Length: 124
Image 1: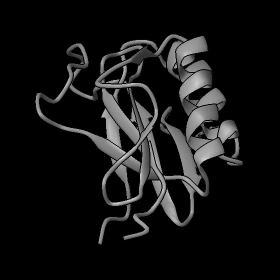
Image 2: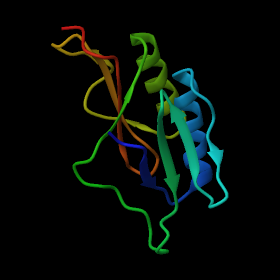
Image 3: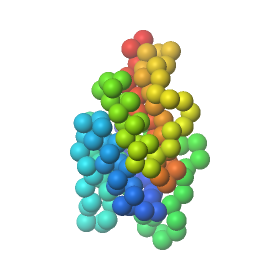
Image 4: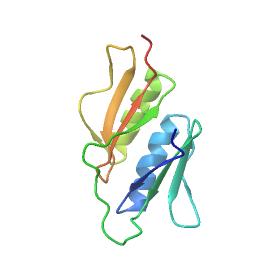
C-alpha cells in the first residue's frame, strides 16, 4: 500500500548512526544520502526516509504514530532492539516479547523520539 514512510530528524548524523545499526541488525544495508539530503533505508521492498524538515522548523514527533518493520526471526528482533538502545534509542513499552498471536515484538524510540516497532509475522 505505501511506497515509503518519511520522518523528520533534527540531527541526521545521529539518526544515521541509530538507523544504520538497527537496519544492519535486520540484515539490511546502511542508509544512503540522496541528492536532496535525505537518508534512505530500504528493507523488503519498502523505504524509510529521514530528513530535516523542509520548512526549516524543528522536527517533532507524531503523537500516536508508530512505524512498524517486519523481522525475519525473534533473533533479529532482539538484535534490532539491542542495536537501537546501544545507538541512542530508548526501550519502551516492554522488553522484546512474544504476543498472543505468536508474533515477537520490540519497541524503541529513536534519538528524535519517533516510535518504532519491529516484529515477526503472527503465527496464529
